[in-house]
Image (tube, rainbow, N blue to C red; front, top):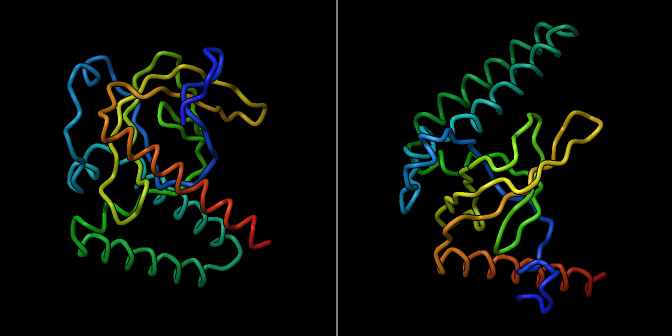
Length: 190
């Protein structure tokens, strides 16, 4: 999987969709180590932005619909309230599977993704991602190596993983290899 020349990246990268969230850390937060595993209570407490972003998008969409049809907006508000009630009642296991699925470019050494807000180079970021929805999430610490601004006021952020265990790196490599095989099979079937 490693490439052969020093000028190339250390690992193969690929574009894919992953359930994913991130959190930019303060210097104080970055001085504390990550827990070995991320249970649902930790995810809900530590990565609330993922859940609140979804709720914000739902509310904004309902308000847009309200301009055209107050009855439809009321129905959607009731459905959203019901879903929120169900989510709180399902317990911790369900919370782990509520992260938004976003496009990323991933390797065994780092990740890049798009954001709407500027993040500074050398920031420390914690990442939460599911390589396989049936498995436990990976909780990874990383540092920002590049921020690329785009004309539409979005940014591509490239990060390098910090202190990966061999098990984490193995999971990343296995995930990428599995995705490559799936892609090759799909191309053969066309």
